[in-house]
Length: 458
Image (cartoon, rainbow, N blue to C red):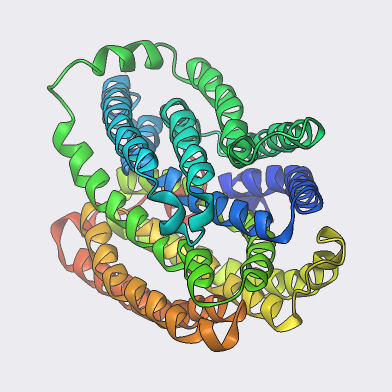
């Protein structure tokens, strides 16, 4: 009975419950988006759109790692109830994001004027359209990315279910916009930016929630954008390694479409893009836990140090990895059955490709738990070192396997790399456990609710 009560009080139960409710909305909208785009465009045009939209993983890097500090300080706020560190972290993050994105937008505009985007993406005949799509995406992202910190803030303040609801709203807005684009036969650059426009609208909701959960935080954060004292070092300690992780980690998979466009056929790009989109929609069930886990581990560290966070992570791994196996098997079957319907029979997604994607989910569950437990500065630096080895390995395997295996090559490269990476991450966690046990900071006893994963009363 106590175990049931403890599980029901865990913040992860709330976020998973919200995801169960919102996932059908997000999944259906994602499938409709694909169906509308594939049905409206030729295979070559869809392959081009898939490459450009696939590169939008970069947009999540353009908070420059600052969301990590916002999550950390918001999680600590639930223990200490001090608004100043949260406002300082948020205000400085806004300043970094706006200035950084302005520079990138100017660089992208210069490359577009030079006609460099088309050849770089493997579509030299689409240089003008590619340039317009990239510049328009970055222009919208200049507004979206500072607003998106509201999700990290709200999750850290104890409302992790805000993340899946925001994703569902973004999906609804995106599919509505692409339906309008299809109806009016809008140019390709407008179709390309519909996902990021959906994120812009959805970001308004967490911002409104944060104003209620921590009154005065947004006003104080705006003042912090012009100040230079305070939490600068703490921002760097977490944001810099987190930025490196955000830059390095997605390169292994984010460049898959670009590699295929250079070494394989247009049909292989389209098949892989469809399967990867289905996999990303399903994986959102796992990735939605990331901000909630970070905030909970931050609260555990505030109560009982790194030892409490690591113990909590082992408990989660034991309970959740079997669910990853079941989830991966279900995805394999569902994706194989759904893909022909989404593609209207125009693309043949092989079962082995669905199976490879499905096999990555148990690894992803354990990785996201351990990775978020190791979010102190030392743990993040160690994760950067691991990724500097794993990501080149992934890209190298993709280049080696894609010419012969086509669409299955990048997926298999990701699976093999993940199978190598996970044991190394586990050894890193064990080493950190031994370090904190023998250090004075690691001997502080953790409160029971921090170890069990229950929220505090704060």
